[in-house]
Figure 1 (cartoon, rainbow, N blue to C red):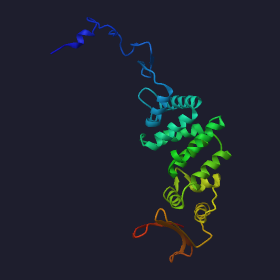
Figure 2 (cartoon, rainbow, N blue to C red):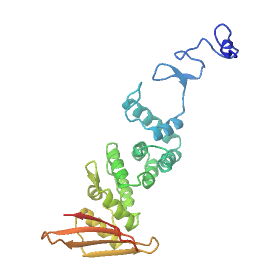
Figure 3 (cartoon, helix red, strand yellow):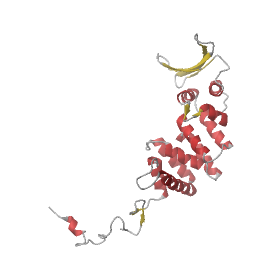
Figure 4 (tube, rainbow, N blue to C red):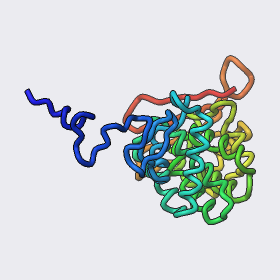
Length: 265
């Protein structure tokens, strides 16, 4: 058995190794003090941004509170936006789309900060990445909750949120409106009354009316998407147990007997 440790202890120091250094003392001039009181090598702002997007800061750590971590990472993000805004926003969207992060909340928060930046070019880049980061209605609601605390509802934000709805095909939009009707006290009706999405498509307009007004101008509107091979119908039916009209949204696929029904009184 070889005792290699004897060559790096105080009794036998190895050249180039500071054997007397402990965790509480610098072993290298490039090291900096960390939150635990020890010394480690400092990561650059881009690596810190990447770690935050993946790990987040929820709950804090043993040596640092959540508030302190969020402030430090927000500062690193601001510095990255000042260095290269396009690269920073692309990194936010890439981490969100890749599925590397357990939760999408850090990416949504980072995008909200970028969308509230003082530079109009940075804001435009951030709002253009909104569909990439906020892929579901839940993500959109969370983004609006975050961005409202950082800025107001300007015309650019309204256009970006409206485009989140209008850029989808009718089937995908109906799925989002029915599955994610509301989260944490915010609904699609609240968002649409702020963003005012509009479309020349009859089915899209009917979906918007169903969300905002709760009714349709026509008794039945149906649109078939030949490319996707599915159909989506929105109809108004009168239930036998009540004199009120029950509005039902049915989405079904051809050659199958399964379908989902959502009833709203």
